[in-house]
Length: 170
Image (cartoon, rainbow, N blue to C red; front, side, top):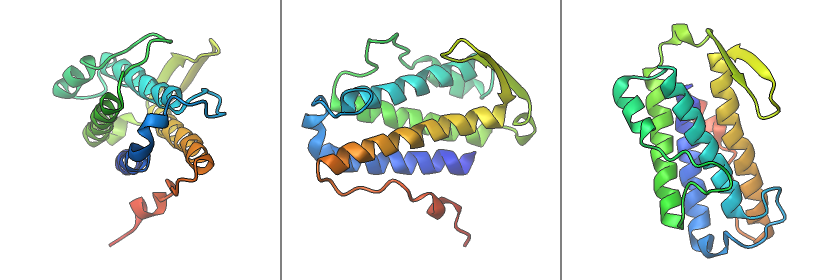
C-alpha cells in the first residue's frame, strides 16, 4: 500500500508538471466522458476527499491524520472541489500526502478485515480493506490514463506508466 501511495504521489506530481503549461486549456471540451480536463480532475479529487473522509470516520488512521482529513472539502456534485489551477495543485498535494500518511500508519493485520459500503449503483459490497485501497489507487491510475489521452490529443508528450520503478530493489 505504501508503494502504491508513493507511486500515486509521484505520478500526480508528474501529471501536474505536464499540465501546468496548458492549465489555461483545462476547461476546453476534451472529448472525454467528463467533458473537460478540469471536470475529470475534479472527479478524482472529489472521490479522494470522500473516501479519505469515510476512512477517517471509521478510525482507519491516527487522530492527527484524521484531523487533517476532516478539514478537506467534500463538495456535493456538481460543486467543484477547487476553483483555480493553483487550488487544484495544492489540494492534490494535500491528498497525496494524506494517502501516504494513511498507508504508513496502517497496521498490516487490518488489511484483510472486511469493509462494507454502498457503491454508486446502490449495491452493498464487502471487500477486504486492502482491496478497497487498491481500488482507490487504481481509480487514480485509470483517470491519469484519461488525462494522458487528452494530453496526447493536445500533442503534449507524457507518460504516467512508470510503476515498475516504484518496485525496484536496491
